[in-house]
Length: 221
Image (cartoon, rainbow, N blue to C red; front, side):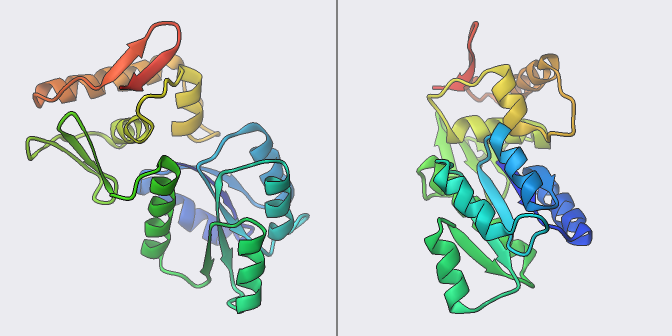
């Protein structure tokens, strides 16, 4: 899940981005509303975690511009204000969820995963394709009730394609969605991760799942 974390507190940015990456999310970081809009203009995100009290351009203005420009990614607002009127205003402007500071990190993760399932059009946290079961909450994969041990990057790749099965993604699209903007990743690295994922699946006796469409990219049927 590709996230944009918009928060002006360096301490909270550092804490959240580290925790989110450990949980398997891909995270870009913006410290003010102007930078957030610049990121949004060039990158497609699954969700935006948006603080409201931001320098340069406030969070509600960022949200309003995003929706007015046709942006449909999920937005989860973080705010110190728990007044009902402010929550209503944020939701009416197009936010999908609203979390009041201070908050539980575990609750934030749960809400983000729920938004991710909503975006993929599913409700069950366990996704199954050809007998391969992927638990988006426990971060586990199994086949015939036996676990398949994957690296974090292999898991992100499999999860991304399973949640979007039937759609073809090019090397560049996978790089954009599965890696942070500040990490330089080559097409060879993507191919290496796909190759290692296929080998682990084969070793477990599981179906290949990830198919290649030559000249176009990769998909799960």
